Image 1 (cartoon, rainbow, N blue to C red):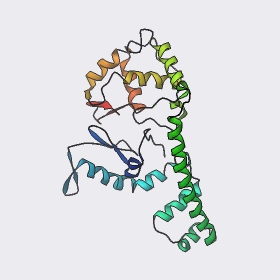
Image 2 (image 1 turned 180 degrees about the vertical axis):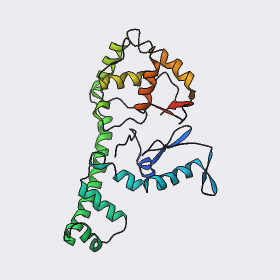
Image 3 (image 1 turned 120 degrees about the vertical axis):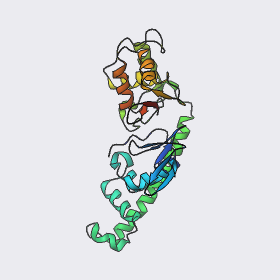
Image 4 (image 1 turned 90 degrees about the vertical axis):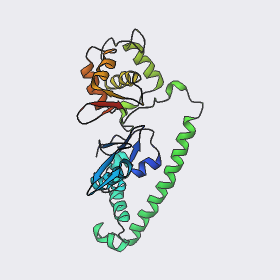
Length: 250
């Protein structure tokens, strides 16, 4: 399952399965986006947007747990066997019930898996603490990774851009300055992402834009604003309604 979990995302947001922007509730596992302050039909009822999003998680993804588990080894860091067993544990199977499903392994093997998974949870907390301390340390500022806006995938190496790389790319592609026009649209993926992030700064996070307004802003960077718009949406930097009438910064 290919997901674009935004970075940073909090533990509470991960366990809920969705995040809130200034104007929307956005599913972490698909493109579903609901407007805050609106009501949505749920069977014979009308419910407000946050509850409708919680219902969406259950209806479309079974549960947040199952959706996160479906991220696979790259997304979870767990082996196929560990993810399968976690699913059994979550669904309430006893160790004896899991035995035949897991290839008639011994009960002690299943209990050992429970222990190992609990240890991984402890280690994950320590790792998160280490990364927080690293971010606040005296490491070379130029070697720090830039923050990726929108719903770009943090697990995709194309998004691993250091501060030094970013400054070099922007200087090379915006000869009139970062707010001017591009000299050319880059071919390398990392450079594409960097220039798109720079152009995204021309949009206000709290606004919703018509397609005409989006085109006008993108035209300040390139005459080929149609291509820019497509990349902005494809890379998860701009969100838009299904009819394309409105767009916003993700």
